Image (cartoon, helix red, strand yellow):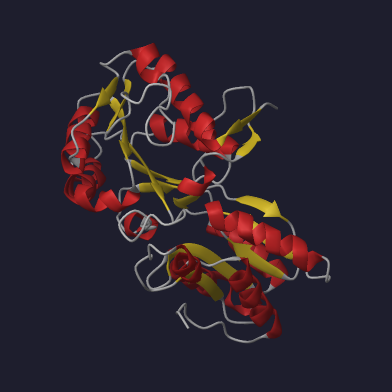
Length: 337
């Protein structure tokens, strides 16, 4: 299979879907005016040249209006793909996204469709500070009517974006800043990937670890190191949070009897707590230790790079959490100091 970056895989998915369906169009800040760069992270590179200004639309800096217009377009038969430059700015879109897009199909008894994709990126990436580094995926997970995707590899980025665009429901599609230029194999054939199907990235028998995106690569590196000591970890990438493949996680826990959940988002109220609760309800008798979490600290992400590294879980924190879990100890809440 050919290799490409995560950004290139997303670009390929957009290009394929825009060629397939003339109702698909892209809109957002600077998606068409950056020439060869193609937006801030290169995802829309070359689309304006191929599809023209009617289908690749630059917008004013007004996220609420961008999503509001997209909701209207979706309701009238189009399939908009909106780019919100940073997920922090989802806070400005909550009225049209949460109160309108997420609820309209239900309120109209299924007679209305809202085939809207909101693409955005999350996570800390070297000093972008508190207003450009948040991970807000749990907010979206909490809203009935929204689907939430979080691809971790170039192949999944392409396949899940194709699925999202074809869905008749609104999808919030989270990318990670640190993944845009990472390379990976992508199948030559056009493929979509069903939502709600987790991937077992590594099979093991001593503990199950659930992680996504940038945290996934850290977990896999820790798993590789611990394997040299005879510690065998099973690593699961959820790929989508809504719907969430709890069956794969429960099946793994029944085998390993321990579970650690890692995410970069703030620990308090994060999606790790929801997954832990579901596993407790479905597989409590199979747990030999309390479910553990290694998550972001309950503070805004600092601008200082060393402080950023202190609040975003790294490999050392993940390894410490795993060793505590395997030893039967409790792993306390994320904190500084």
